[in-house]
Length: 609
Image (tube, rainbow, N blue to C red; front, side, top):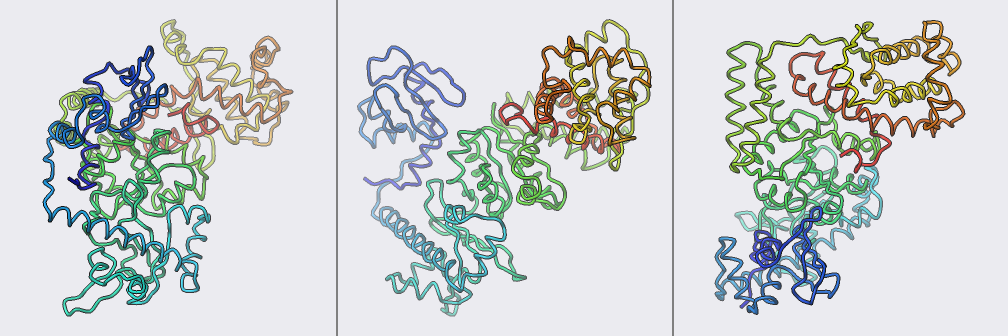
C-alpha cells in the first residue's frame, strides 16, 4: 500500500536513527553524531556513522547506507510495512489506512505540488520581463546577487487580475486546481483573481526544497506589505520555516542557525554565509521549534530591534520554555533599535554580524532580564512579586531535569539579588568618545587577592599587552575601549594601564616615543624600561618596536582574546543581571559588549563561541 509522504516524514522525524540502532549496538558520541561497529560486515573498529539531524546511517567501510526504516528491514528481516508499523508504535502514531479516498488525496497533493512548481517557474520568468523590472531593481538594490536570486527562485507576480490564470490555462491547468493550490482566489459570486499581484515573490518550500506556497512583497505603499499564500493541502504556515531547505546542510555543519523575522533577512544572511530561517507571519510555533532543534540544539533568535521584534522574541521564549530538554535551548541576539540583520550586515559586514552573534544571550539570561524589565523590583513588595513570577516561569518547563536546573539557577540569582549592594569601583569608560579614567586604585597587596586574579591573567601576559600598546599606540583606536574594561590582576600594572589611556586620550596623536616620554615623566621610568626590554619581549616578537603594525595588531588581538575574554565575559554576565537597575548599569553593559566584540574580531567563530 502507498503511505502519504507527510506521514513517513513525520515518522522519520519522531524516531531518530540513533534511538533504533542504539537498541542493538553500542553507540559512541562523536560531536553531534554517533559511531558504532557496523552490523553489515565483519567490523573490527567503529565505521558506522549515525547522523540524526539528516536521518541516515552510513558505513565508511562497506558503504551500507539508509534511514531508520531501511535499518529495520536490513537487520531484522522485516517487510517495509512491518518496519513502519514497529516504528509507528514507538512514536505513538497510527499508520494511515490505505483507503481509496486517502490514495486519491495523496495523488491530489502530488498534482498540486507540480502545479505550484509550474507557477513558480512562470513567476521566475516574469522577473526577467519588462513587467518585472521594478521587482528585479528592488532585489538588486537590496544587494542580492544573481546567484542568490536563482538559489531562492525569486520571482515577480504581474499586477494583473488573471495573468497567472491565463498562463496556467495554456499549460492545461484548470482554475479549480489553482484555487485548491492557493494560487487563485474565488469570490462568493464566482469571480476569480490571482492571489499574488504586483509583488516580488519568495517561493516557500518544504524541508526537501519542493515549492509549496509563496510569500509576496508589494512595492510602494500598498497594503498588506507582505502576503503569504493561504493554507492548503500542501501548506500550513505554522509548520513551515522559510529558508529551511537552504539552511539545513550549512547549519548542520556549522552548528549555527539564526531565526530571523523576514524573507529578506534570511536571504541576506544566507548570501553572507550565515544559515537562517524565518517563521511565516505568526509567532514561532511548537512544530517550528521542534524543526529547529532537529537541525541544531541552540538556534539563535534574531528579531528586529524595535518593540515588535522584542515582543516576538519574548513570545518565542515563552513558547519554547515548556519544550526545553537537556541540551536543547535557544539564544537571543539583541539588535539596536530600528535595525534588522540585513541592516547590520550592510553597515558592519558579515564579520560585524558574527561578532554580535557570538554574544547572543542564553535563554536563562534572556528570561531573567525580560521578566525583571516587565515591572520594577525596587521595593520589598515588588521584589517579592518578581521572585514569584520568575519561579513560576521555571515551573513551566516540562522536563524535570531542565526544570530543576532552571530552579537552581534562579535561586542562585535571587540569593545574589538579596545580598546588600556592593560598592562598585568606577572602572572608567568611554563617554561620547572621551575616556574617563578610574580613580587611582587603592593597593590590593594581599597574597590571596593576587592569587585570585592571577588565575585569570598572568603577570607576564599583562606586561606584554602593555608593552605592545606602548610600542604601537595606534592600536588604541580599535582596542582602547576593550583595554579600558580589561582590569589587570596586578595593581601596579592596572594603574599603568589607566595612565596610558589617560595620556593617549589627552593627546591621541602621540607616537611610541612620545607615549614612553610621558610615562617616564609620570614616574614610570623603571617600569617602562623593564616592559620594553629585550628579555621581557623575548617570546613576544609582535610587541617589539620593530614589529609591523599588522603583526602587532594580530598578536595583541589574540593575546587579549585569550587572557581577557574570560574576565570580560564574567563582567558581562554580571552586567546583564544588573542592566535593568539604572542607566549607568545599562551603559556599562553596552560598553562591555563592545569591548568583548572588539577583542574577538580577529578570531574565528570556533574560538569564541
